[in-house]
Image (cartoon, rainbow over all chains, first blue to last red; front, side, top):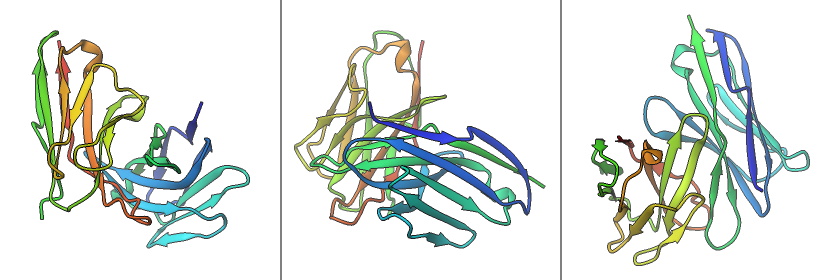
Length: 112
Length: 114
């Protein structure tokens, strides 16, 4: 059975802290790993990772994939209250139908 | 450019009633998806479509039907609603070309079945 597991499930940090969110997967026909941020409503896309060891970066957020150990991390440096959200990891499968399976998410709360 | 829109935003149904959720996108995307999101379960794929006139089952299709008669619209139907279908429903779309994996999500529909 395909699995996408995120940890921790929730996290409370102070503004300015650095956090690392984890996503591990056990799937057949892996194509890419995706990170989304979900605030009150719809998830918004952060990163797509397909190759091992290549860091993707956007401002204070960065992410990397390890296809040998089957995991990815999402780092947020100098956290701000606006980073408070649920962070979702998802795996995109190869094959004709391009299925996507999501993890449960990590709820991050940044307090002033 | 409205992106992905969903109608309605909220709905309360009684067990056994039927309804249709509408998803519309104005980005000319080929692929469209319906997910449900429940506490502790993450987003689960109900049905998806890879083009006008095509639909396919996802992880949790039972109790739902879909149609994609027009490229821009993807309808999700509940024929006989059950309390287990109480959830937040998200529609998403993406372009469908080789490197366009980003899914654009609608704002969600909160459905309660009593």
